[in-house]
Length: 295
Image (cartoon, rainbow, N blue to C red; front, side, top):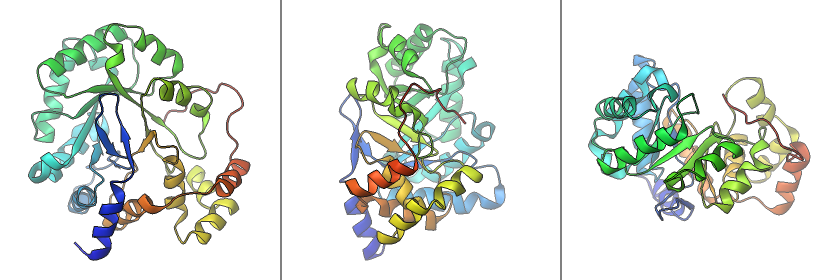
């Protein structure tokens, strides 16, 4: 590892987010959506994930849905020699979230991931299975040692309150939702609710999914001018914005080592109140309840 990379790693651990059980993880992790789908890219993606771990971005997020298990297979290969260094997260599909199917789904994920436990297991989104049954299934997996903790994904405020009122619902560790500068709806009620209940947000697509929305963010004059003044890329600026409050874990996908290095450098990037105001002026915070964005 080069001197610059060592400095990145040392600075990175100063920015962490704590789960309700006291476990602290880096504020920037690694997402794997759309990874493991092209055999020609497998080595590049594995190298990127391993470098991310080396630089301290130890949270690796995947799901049984991604590539119909392909992403989990890739992550399993990448982490097999360094499993103990990673905080591994996967997600169960809603139709597998009952007391019988969840055990099978989890065991299948563990097999693909070449591990005997998950650090965190999430309900991918809410389906028709009652939350009370999903919680019971999660607690059973914890008791069996197959997962260390559990959480949810794509649940809005009313769902979180319902979850909270169920027996063992307070064992929920995180809510993973879409959150970036161009999608700020959760700031009106969901983010404050989670903060008041000491539940971190895990932000997927923190610099927006590809296409015109991402380009609109990257090319906005306010974003570009602030990035130039801070000698960073627009993507790095958007990532720094996402984790600015200290209770958000961002999981950008980085399938190349160059992107991994750029993400790790965000550890030392802080935004001033003036810069945050400029970004607020360009992308207004919500003034009313908004529908939860999902992609």
